[in-house]
Amino acid sequence: MRKLAIGTALSGALALAGIAAPAASAATPNLVFSDVTVNKGKAIVVGTGKTVSVPVTYTMTRPADLVIDNEKTFAAVILYRGTLRALDNELDPGTMPACTTTATTDTTVTESCSETIQVEPGLDLFEAADATTWKAGGLYAHADGTASDDFLSAESDVAIWGNLATAKVQRAARLTADASPEPVAKGKTITVRGKLTRADWDSTSYKGYSGQKAVLQFRAAGSTTYTNVKGITSGTGGALTTTVKASKSGYYRYVFAGTATTAAAKATGDYVKVK
Image (cartoon, rainbow, N blue to C red; front, side):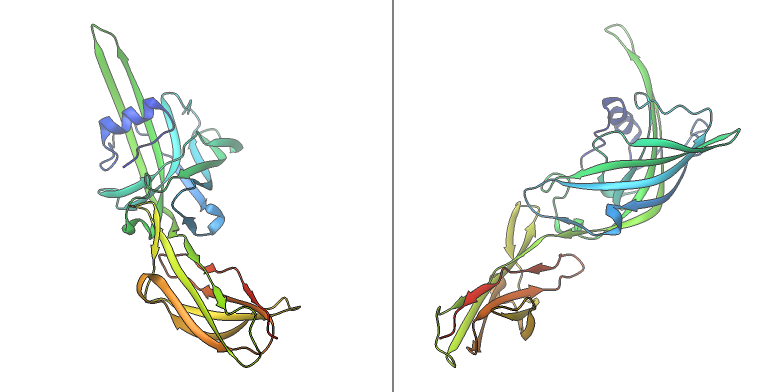
C-alpha cells in the first residue's frame, strides 16, 4: 500500500503512528472538513497505463493558532477503502493542497482547499476489489524530531476524520466492432464481430469481460444518430458476434452501458457500403 507522498516527514509520521490505527492525543487539534467533492462528483475511471489525476476540493476549518506549514504539520483529504481501523487501500495527494482563507473568527480560520490525487494502475490500484466505492477522510499529521549520529528522537500525531464523502472507482472498458463483408449486396447477411475487455490492474492489461449485455447500434450514412438494433451477451473472452440483414449503407457499433465496477464503453463505428 502506497503511503502519503506529500512529504518525507509525513510519510515517516504515518509509518511510526500506523495510519490504520490513528494516534489520538490531547495534542490533536480539532479540524473540520466539509463540502468534500471528489473528481467533480464523477466516477474515477482507471485503465492500465495512464496515471489518472483526481481533483479534490473541500472546506477546512482549523484553530486560528494552528500553523499548517507542510513541513512538520500537514492536512489533506485522502481516499480509503475499508475502515479507518483496518484500511484495505488508500489514495493520497501527490502534492500539497492549495488553500485560500475565506473566513476568520477570534478562534478559527476557514479555508477553501484543492488538491490532486494521482492514481497509478498497478501501484495504487492492484486488485479487483479496488473497483468499488471509496470513502474520503480528512487527515491531520504532525511529525517532529531530531537525528544525529549520537541521538535520535521522533514524535508524531496522526488523526483521520472519516466518511466525509464517497467516490466510485471503476475499471476502464474497451469495445471493438468489425462488420463484414464490405461491401455487401442489399438483403445479404452482415456479421458484426467485436470484443469487450476491461482493465485488470493486477496484470496491467485488458482482459475479456464475458457474460455482459451489449447493444448493437446502426447509424445510416448521412445521419448523426445511432439507433438500437439488437441486444447481445458477451461470450468467452468478451467475444461479441451477431448478424443483421443489409438494408442501407452505414456504421455498426457495439455499446456497453457499464456495471458498478466497470465503466461504460462504445466501439468506433465500422462502415459498410450496401450496393
